[in-house]
Length: 284
Image: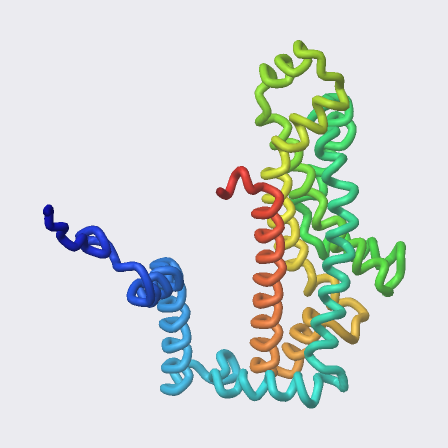
């Protein structure tokens, strides 16, 4: 009779199956990335420097409030309100203005940019018009918008709309220019018509550039928010920052700036999530 020897339950150097390998798999899955640790360390250093500068009174509090003062400013604006309206209300008003102007600009500027990239005649009509007002400061033509459309919401949304257009059109035009003409010629030689070329080749190829331009456009539109809310406004984050500066309320100014930055990061994160879902072939 031959004797059989017991085989090891797992190969040498590998984790055993069963409950013994589960904790290791759990920690390896949820182990923080190096980049996340670097980001947290950077934010912690900035906070500590801010705390020490204000604690040692290196700079007067009227210029840089302490973290405690800013926290009290958040408490005041959230629960008591600024000029009778809470921080959430001001935030929603500003987000409504920004998103309305930006969304309308996306629906108009992206098709215009694609048309400019595909047709030299369309580009000849709109290119220099956009390039003319693109470098102009928003306040330079905001006065005209107020003169033409009044001091209501329309002039504010129009300013944000105009600020959002140039990055969108430029991104769409550059996206079309990056497409190799040989790819389009190959599709046409295989019998594809103009509609099929646009939807099967041009639009998918330009989508990454368009999404990038949408992110840039949204950020730039947000920077114009303060300019849009300083004229005849009584609500909004930009107005709150501007009004607090008149009374030297640096804590409220910091509250507004932090709120705008946090909401801007949130909006950009939503766009990045949408980009990963639409462009799985790029991010996988």
